Amino acid sequence: MYKNEMDKLLKLVYFSPTDTTKNILYKIALELGVQINEELNLTNFEYCNFEKTFNENDLIILGSPVYGARVPKTAKNRFNGLKGKNTNIVLILTYGDVHYDDALIEFHQIMENKEFSIVGIGIFVTRHNVINCIGVNRPDKNDYEEIKLFCKKLIENIKENKYISNRIETKKIFERNNKLPIKPKGNRNCKNCGLCIKLCPENAIEQKNPRKTIKGKCICCMRCVKYCPYKARNLSKIVYFVSKLFVRIMKTIKYNHENKNKIIV
Ligand SMILES: Cc1cc2nc3c(=O)[nH]c(=O)nc-3n(C[C@H](O)[C@H](O)[C@H](O)COP(=O)(O)O)c2cc1C
Ligand code: SF4
Ligand code: SF4
Image (tube, rainbow, N blue to C red):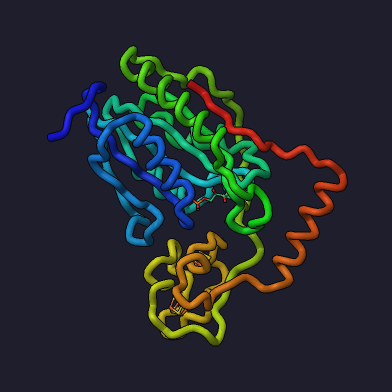
């Protein structure tokens, strides 16, 4: 089996409907210079009751996007099935250049008391996958430089058994509905190929009529929109109109959005 300088087996675990978080994890793996030993894409519906315990010689990079400034409920439920055995873990969040608010504290709370040792947390700016006129061209060259530095520090922490848990704010976080009140649906370009039904993390697309989205199940993750080969699923034009207007207003009032990566190592 492949051994590296840190003597760890690198495992990428993620919830990443439109694959931005997954790509950041790949970049981190590349910078760590460690071959990927296992990849678990918890986005897929088949993982909704998944449980797994990792070992002492595993190094887990766990990734999630931010939804409504929090960890998406779907991701939280799937991450709850993960356990360590004195296992090193790195937590990664990606956010669409608006805000991540309590997502960092929440992510830390989800993964603590599960016998993982957290060696670093990174929160990275990406293009917003719903309001895609925000975060355009992110991650960029500077972001990749920050990822590089982050990885250097991670390697040091792993070698020196340095953990960061005591540096995360501990406060009670209240349940919040981070579901957007919008959902994509199919149009007449749909060829009934079934791909969106297979990819949907919440089984929210009707089997018999993939143009229909099941109300209450859809988390508006945009996976079906991105991967439909016929561009047959989309949000309504009004949503795009309103979101563009929102961005314009934000710019006019010079709303100071996060715009920065946050690295805790
Ligand atoms: C339902 C939903 C809610 C989101 N909420 C936020 C948010 O509160 N703040 C933010 O900056 N970005 C937000 N985003 C943007 C995503 O966090 C960002 O695009 C992320 O990189 C997507 O990751 P993925 O490609 O791995 O799915 C949201 C996206 C979705 C789909
Ligand atoms: S992926 Fe697109 S074409 Fe295929 S069933 Fe879904 S909406 Fe229809
Ligand atoms: S139907 Fe909703 S939950 Fe399912 S893939 Fe599409 S946007 Fe995501």
